Amino acid sequence: MPHQSDPELERLLARAANRASRRAFFIASALEDYRKMEGLDEAQLADYLRCTPKDLARLALCRRPQSESSKFKDEVRAIARHTSIDGGQLMKLLRQVDALGALPAGNTALGAFMAARDSEEEDKSLSGTPGSTQEPPPENDND
Amino acid sequence: MWDDATPVEPPSAEFDRRTHQRLLASDPVAPEELAEAYLRYLAYRLARQYPNVDDDLIETAVTDAILSYAERPTRYNPTLASLAGYLLMSAAGDLKNALRRTSRQTQFESPLEAADVELEEIPGNIEVQGRQEPAIEPDGLPENISWKALRERVNKEIPDRLDRQILELMLAGERKTEVYAGLLGLESLPLEEQRRLVKQTKDRLQKRLERLKKDFNAPPE
Image (cartoon, chains in turn cyan, orange):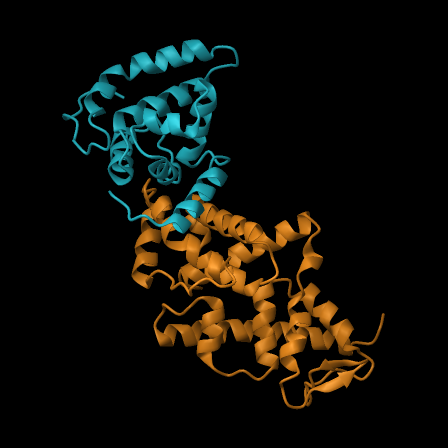
């Protein structure tokens, strides 16, 4: 969904996104974890999600979908539509961060590998052009 | 920067109702829409309530109030206050906590001190120790109680700044519902609802005031 340019509001949203990164409830926390894990700056993270830094702030303020939830894919799709980011990339990011969070310290590489492998098929179905709103095919997996 | 900001209107009551329902239903996008709709409005309103406080602290308090509500929407009861009023009160609470934590509370005047300037305009004010103090007869203070003591006691008993602002208006004889509704952020509600909520707030504060007066009149232990 395109948003009109409003520098003051963008500044307030960016600030709120920053505060939200301290709360596990918001996607901001997962973005921050991923950014640190991969050593990315904000622009690189935006590139990864195929969006602009402005979209990133809006994304950060959405509720963080839980990868174990049956609603996970639907919620990622809804967020992707709303914020013009790549749903497949977001799904991969969230799964990776969740997998790492569940592992004891020291097993980060293994966790990242497992998360990437587990979600490979779904990523293909959700990834598209930047900001794509295309719907993936019907799901018949068991997660 | 919020000092000279253009007045900002609150979102509609319909937006509030819908957003609250969506938050309760864990809609993942609702928190973002809430922030987008309320950040600027709350920053503007809170800055007007606390004109001497840094914009930085104002914006942090507003942000935290929005994020907290998005995370725990059940804490808000729509039958008791408008969403704008609730968020404003929550932000004011966060701001006061931040000011206490950073020991910067002295940078802004307490509401009753600030009100002294306005009270000079009210007919019937009296001079106490070189300061203009409001005459609140016939329900006035006992002779042995100073206005300073009252101020300290009121600030302790009624810690919420918004409550004290409303109390000041009551003491100043303000009767217009719209003035109280504006302060409480109820403007977007129907007039009858505004009247009901304003009366509810004033009754609650009146009871606290009565309790305070009783305490002052009680013989020392």
